[in-house]
Amino acid sequence: MISVIGVRFKDVGKIYYFDPDGIDLQVGDDVIVETSRGVECGKVAMASKQITDDKISKPLKKLIRKATRDDLKIVEENRKKEVEAFKICEEKIAKHNLQMKLVDVEYTFDNNKILFYFTADGRVDFRELVKDLAYVFRTRIELRQIGVRDEAKMLGGLGICGRPFCCNTFLGEFQPVSIKMAKEQGMSLNPVKISGTCGRLMCCLKYEQDVYTGLLKTTPKIGAIVETPDGNGNVIDVNLITGTLTVSLNKAPDAAPHTYNVSEVKIIKDGQIRLDRSEIEKLKKLEKD
Image 1: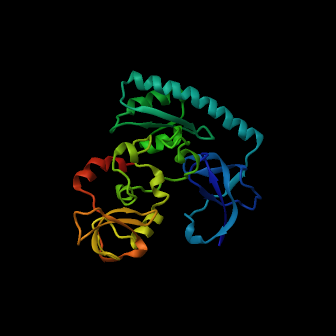
Image 2: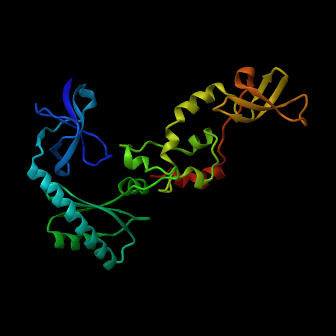
Image 3: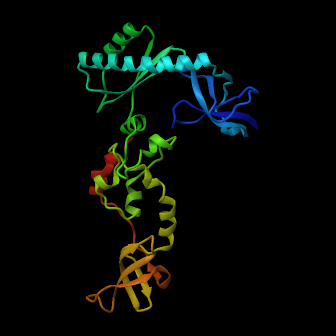
């Protein structure tokens, strides 16, 4: 077992482990640590706790110190410099006529590097841009291409539900979301209805998936052959949440279908949830990062 603290460098970012080096820290404390990008100022998101060695990526770096007032002043100054750097970079992008969209700028705490985050439809040759930026700022420059989901996480906004983006408020990391989830949840495979503002599948499709997976194990699917109190029939509609089935009875195929609760029927042969190739190709882009 080893003692660690969890540190975030963005309000809703990934948590990284560090050795507290015997310093007593509380959640919300600002700390100075060394990362692969250099010295950074982060915020404690998880107080000191004991975890097993196999959950740690070694070597575990030690906390440098708890952030001082002077450290926090540097952070504030860096935020101001980032605003100016953003404007300058946009001007340089326009000058070089590059097909890219600048999303965010980030100074490392020690000013050893400036990171410029951007989106683009394809590869961008930004070598001349880097030279121009290095000449202006006289420090290391890194241009990092990000996906539309990362862009939404950085910029924030309101989702179709009317609430702030999940990724910008509480999701530390993106969870994989698939077209299959939308199909299993009985949603219309209309891109407008199942995609978020970022143009990718809504993250909230993941939240209830375990419940739907469990219900699908005990609920006949559309196309299933079932035994009902009124005889055998085919399931033509299913409501997983209420557990109700609409069944067309074999003895009266032209009559109005009957409605049953899942507890009233017995599965003879279950149906399958399938995605047509045309559906997959049409919606494949929605699964990309």
